[in-house]
Length: 451
Ligand code: SF4
Image 1 (cartoon, rainbow, N blue to C red):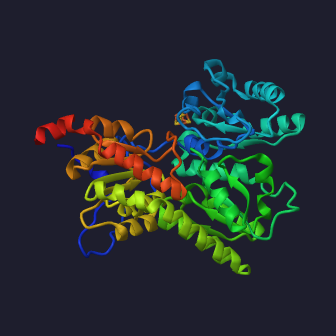
Image 2: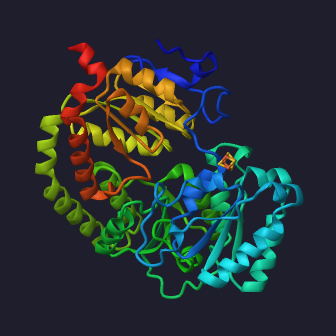
């Protein structure tokens, strides 16, 4: 019997039949003792910026902070592989006493000379905030000596939630926007914000937009290059996928360069198609873009639909739990699960806001549990109560599912199959089917007990 901590109760809602959406508590510091699934501020910055492939990424702090390496937070690059290295100043006791600035400067000068990056990002961790290293001054000095942008990311782990890390990453990357030449950018051009090319998704999307006749100036940050980001202000529209992480960058670009932004999702047939139509509608001065979008959607859906139907027949009535970083991804996942006949019994996020949770409640079936900033015990309790067949989450949710004997689908940084676009929807259905239908779950203790 697992009890909810009393302080956690306002962050959990059960959708009641016909009732209006409840006002859920969210957007606050994690409850002490709750062992939140949320990552720290530094980790939030790191996941957003690390896919920039031709930059140095240096974790200024003790070596433990650098534990999330490319191997478990991977992002693919079509060129430079510099981002796959993990660099850290490895601060030790004497650095904590005497300060880490000299070590940081020496590290930067050595690495820049050796790797010749286009820019360097320095991530401040908790200890750097505590000892008060002047990272900005070091960045300025090294930038003057080397001639490349050296950007401090103010991501001290203790100073907020993962969402504050997203904001720190956006502020750092924004210093590059507007510093490049925009000559030659097509009149119908976009930036994709919040797509990280974990398993090749950016390449799928770039191909779709190319087929529509729309130029992608920069994808921030999937398979991105410093020079692309520098000229991103030349695009006419920003499409924001991971809204939790990138809305602040989109707002800054709207404020300073007048570039409007739209929230999109590239996951699932409905949302992928809506994202293409959104751009086509924006560039309505050229109606051929809309015609091409309609044709692309027709062709791509026709190519995957029969196989999707086969999976649906096998998955209908199965139940899933969703726990992801941003709530916008949860909306798409719920729609995609419905398309293959599955129910969402539990849905939650680390960083959703009030509007997100209202929408999740409106979309959910009666009885669905909606949860903000959850923890392993709560998630285990809800999974057992709802007897779900599948858990969709990231690296920290996988062991919860497997310990309970539940199928798991990685929708985060560890995955190796792209889940965006039409082919991504088919990959998703295949993976869900392979996991849910695996005969191994019949041997899980909870299933064996119920026989
Ligand atoms: S919470 Fe602080 S010490 Fe822990 S990983 Fe984040 S930055 Fe490092």
